[in-house]
Image (tube, helix red, strand yellow):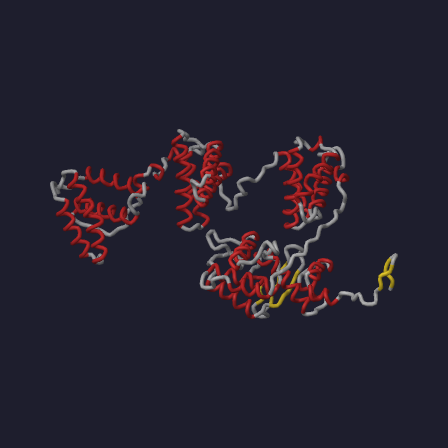
Length: 535
């Protein structure tokens, strides 16, 4: 067709859309917010006849307005759809309701398909981004997550490198990009989620470039310090040796690694970067510097550092047996940690919205902690094999002690678990009961489980200043306190809590105020005389 009026074409297209069943309200939107805007533009250009050149010019103009937030996404979509129908009608006198290809794919150079040469070149940045995005699909992420990583991360990286004329992979360029994103976030020019997506995309590119594959894991905090390669290798070797020999539990290894890292950071700050130059005086000075950073005492820190220094001497990395510069024990600073009161437990269990999948999970986890006293690591690690539905029992191997523990399953807990498993838990092959709410679905991390309780504590408005450190473990303290108030023997308390040593039950006795009052000795009959007390 030639020299066809745009206005006449809109009438025909609207009639065809009506015939294929487009609702009247939607036809009205297309007529006034789509076709009407196009006709206005053509009239303003002095061209009443349809022209592909004029239409392309108009669409570029409208896209710019949309990207500058001068028109809404809805209006942009109306105009783009009507423009596509006019183009189709002009070419074939027909219209179809097929979904449009994404504008970004058609017009954004960052979204084009890479050439064969770019894909084969392992250092080509454009090809690397394409291969990394393709590998990312293996994690079953939601469409929204993929879109966020693409828009906020991969596109931003390509745009940054294009501006700086960088076409090959550069670790330094990625570091500069992330540093700029961090600065923009700290200056409130970038929201937290966009910054996190940008940083994650950069980390994914670096990992895929270096290893040729991706492993889904959390990124460390931005300001996490890094040890020198020599010190870092020694710490990893120490942890791996204990893991292989099974001399320490996994949780103890993680705690020890943290303490050893803090010690070595102090050693580095003192100017030592080689174990062979360290002396007993160096070790002693570092312990003195670290001590104030542990307000509850260095009871868990001292053994870890001693063990690490003994390991270094055994491997021949130190001249002296530096562990002898540290005492074998340290005076503990005990703090009494209270659990939740009955009223607080009731408020916490009422806080989750049990009509949502997340609320069902959170309620089941907290109720399980209230009625069994299990540690957070054992609840987050609970598997289907651990639940005996016929006998209404839980059978777990405690992560901390490695000891088997069997506990009864109350009907209320069983119902909460069934509600979550059947109506809230994502469908996947994972054997763990409690999973993350977003794909890729995986076992809930201990820190994530702990943050659940912290979130509800804040929501309930509990006073965290008066009684600090009210977290997941407070359920366990409340469970122990209730058992003591029921006047059960200390041996049974220790067994129900899964303690490997009877002394581990002493802190639960310390918070039983009612029981301690009954042990108080009266002062009647004591006479005070000069020189002392007389019975």
